[in-house]
Amino acid sequence: MKSQILSALRMLLVLTLLTGVLYPAVVTLVAEVVFPRQAAGSVITVDGKIVGSELLAQRFANATYFWPRPSAGDDLTNYVTVASAASNKGPTAADLKSNVTVRAVAFRQAHGLKPDAPVPSDMLFTSGSGLDPHISPEAARLQIERVALERKFSAEQKQRLVTLVEQSIEPPQLGFLGEPRVNVLKLNIGLDQLH
Image 1 (cartoon, rainbow, N blue to C red):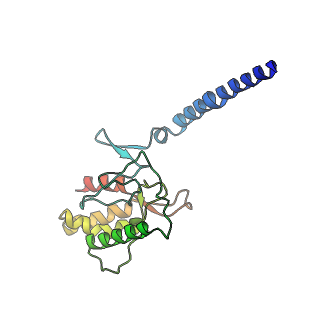
Image 2 (cartoon, rainbow, N blue to C red):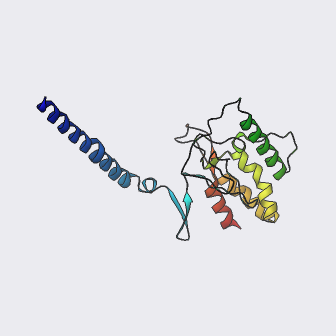
Image 3 (cartoon, helix red, strand yellow):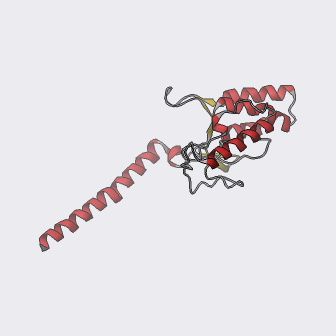
């Protein structure tokens, strides 16, 4: 009996060292060598100052910026990135329907669209993580007019904005995974540099 307990404790110690110390250390080291930017959080800096990560959405509520998807962690002042999660609401949830209706009306009003105009689904529904940093090219294109008006762009500046949006479209990963998308943080950084 005593030898079985000692064997079990030795096995626990060995497995703890292998799977709890050695393996994570090797994976971390390899990640930092092979993918240093991603291992550091895909941080974006502007003029030497960290402005965010290209992997996490940020709230841009000001009309002079492109807006991201709604966030399940949104507390109306900023995205709550610590508790990222989906809302887990289904199609029968009354508050989901209410939230989507409110978002649709607000988006249409802010962009001068007709009351029955279609709104891209990514501007109405949160993503699986609640922190998706991307929007569809269609959602970005719909916001061009509002951003240009709010920033009082000339026709030439507006055309440069259109070009910026088109250049910001990222293809599907590996050419076939997912859909084309636009990273809102990167787009807004480019917008500030454009202006």
